[in-house]
Image (tube, rainbow, N blue to C red; front, side, top):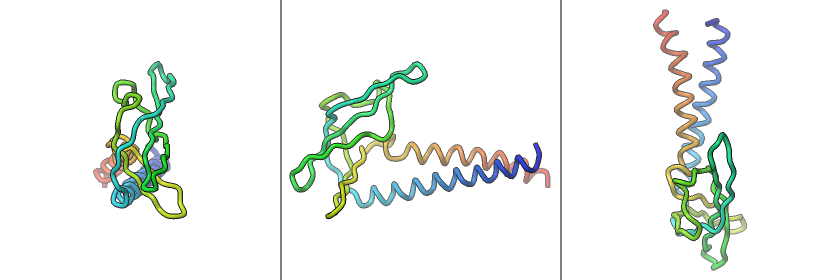
Length: 137
């Protein structure tokens, strides 16, 4: 492999690792500030991709003011792992005066999957560059 390609792979790996770390830090701050509430799945949106059925779902929560708010899941899931309509799900919720509420479904997949995937891909790329480069010195 040329040194130019190795350099590009190294830079891309560092960028992906940095994005993964930033995602982990952002989620840690969110989890620390949020309070746990219970939400209910009120609707779903299904579609097919690569021969598999995927779906997003909308969850409704009650705010501390008594009002109800809805939000959409950020990670698609397969029908086997998704909650059913009307099912209760754990929700992490941040309410601040003058700002719209922020909410995420309190599952590992919803909170950490994207960051974990970026960290894994970045680590593999980094190791692929670092190990062969270090052994040739």
